[in-house]
Image (cartoon, rainbow, N blue to C red; front, top):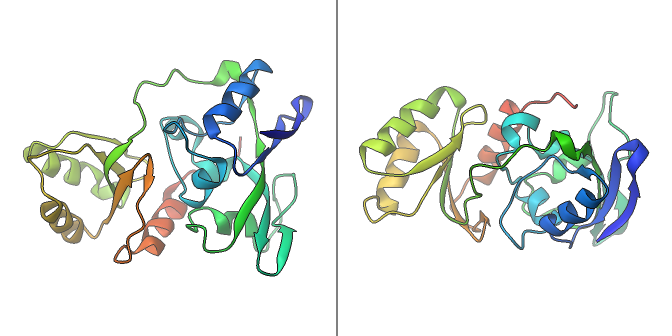
Length: 222
């Protein structure tokens, strides 16, 4: 659900529980879109934020942090806004960015404000989002080495080299044990993807994955 839309300002406030694809369809009617995704069907705005989901748009527009302006967060202490509906351009803590990749541990996202672009900038999506499989998050400098290793084992991959993210399709040729060995060898983070989002895993070092995203994603805000 779109709560507020300001076409002239290229900005929209949307419900955290709304599905990303539904929001994109509604905005497209108005000639605009959020430059994130595309994601699997059913992924909500909140899920996209707390899992720091990426899609093929990331190659051109960077990751979600480039487009998320503000959120309304519900915690045990109540509801509050994490920022303002403008780009942050002063020093200090950016609470909104803390939510990106937080896995929901900081509270429930009720509303989110995004910067938009005209729909004519929307690229044609070639690579479908990964619905089920595995994702390796590594240093961009290790990307080609890992992909070469995976291909030698018969794995099918897709990825985002500038982010150090490698998606691996399910295969009988590649066991979970082997994937873990590869992740350990290269110091990478291995995530299981189910229904388009990471599966909670108590053994996963989600903090490392979040740091990698923040270190190497493009901070330039269009």
